[in-house]
Length: 214
Image (cartoon, helix red, strand yellow):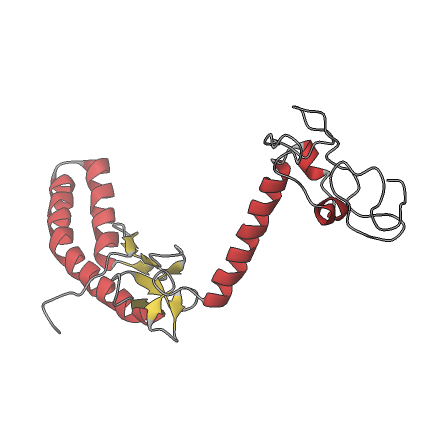
């Protein structure tokens, strides 16, 4: 057995004097696995000596101190062995990303096709769905923020055309008004003859093609 103990940073040590237990979790999603509790014989013996010392004092109190010193050596060795065993047991469930060095779970956070964690190489289908949903939310908020007047712009309004300036005085128009706020010109006057369909010029009172009154 090697004197070196390989360790990772994605674990929690739940061990006590009574035994050993470890949790290994994914750096990305936080999910993971916990080893089953493994009782410690040394910890149990120490607990008995400590109880005896608290009840009788004297000799038994000294025995408890000896037990604690035994625990500090034997228990630590047992703890190291338990940690190595836990690493061997649970390490196959995780993989280290070669790009960001995070330890992630193979089940949910590893992109097999790219050989990277999903933080570095997300699933494109998932990202596309998220992008579409985000765009829909943006459109909802944009619509909610529209002025009431803008919400009334139906398709017939857009087909008719909206002028940016008055055809008579050329004053800029801040909204789709019916009359020019500067000269009073009718901005929504008919542009084609209702009878023959000929194009009408601003200010025409009769159609130049068929004489129909505008």
